[in-house]
Length: 424
Image 1: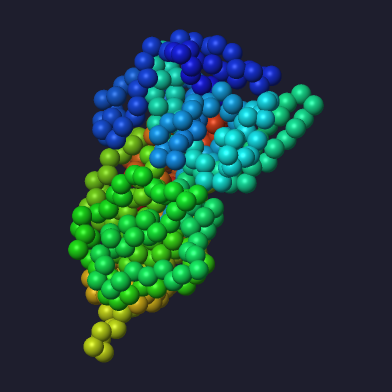
Image 2: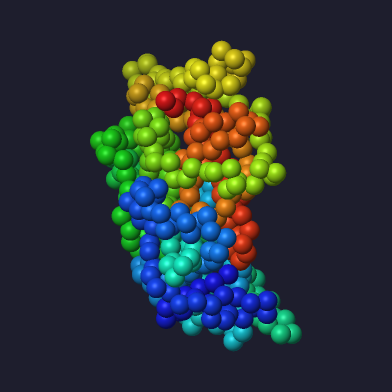
């Protein structure tokens, strides 16, 4: 564990005290452009591969509008981060902070910690005087646990990304009135209505712009959507995203983001964020999991009924490279009924989306990776392994676990895109 103050790198010693370690020459932020040009970014690649690199992290307490309030990295003792490909909450972390003078005593008016308080976590590497930072997420704290020992005081918290304030995990329940989205509202407008309707401690919930695919800008609801009291705002947003076959989640910088779940060309052309060499994955711990119950090769979606006609879409895994395709594996179909879907085209989009998600979890490789700060869910890397007959195969990441407080490797789960239906 390490943090930076006044151009000096401090590391945590065996007595949980931070001591000066080295001087910082330059801080570099891993933006999308830099990551896409990864293999020309030689110094960063060297930092990843060098055994002399030091893993670092930075924790900020945020204001209501998510501007920086205070750098609290020096309080951080330990923690771990999980990143998952799924609808809704994709990022979570657990942290333990020093609490010697009760700085972190929960209090709604005087303390630094109460329901809805947000934090920003950055992770990175120190190497040869340079620090490479990657923002890891905007988080809000769940129930804290305070421990008062003989020699030290600590506070431990599980934290979740901002979707937890919408889906009922930490907030987002509708009040005594029915929440209504009128017929003819665009999906984008409907999601904005959801965000505007929810108040956090009586204030605006989200100050950052929604990221929404332009291809779905003109799609509207076919009838009024009404939710009874005690429904969650997040549940409505996921329902709206499912209508158009989109992933919905908060990205690493805190924007609510919708991305197409069925844009095959986009996935095939995604940048490869890392090409693993033979010593960068711990092969002795490699495992391949095949979950036969989750192997699905046909999805049928029934949508709304208009003038006696029911909209319908069918997606079938016919991909030649997939071992679970309809020709090599007995049919294992699932049926989805969603009256919010108002065209055959959108039914097909949803069917393809669900088939893609299922094919990502039916057959997975789980491994330990060197620490690579910029990796994220639903992104690609490349890997070769003779035991599994992989030769420069592309893999899409489904889960990542990172321990903040040690030099331990990352735990990573990924699926060969040869198995992911409807890609390529």
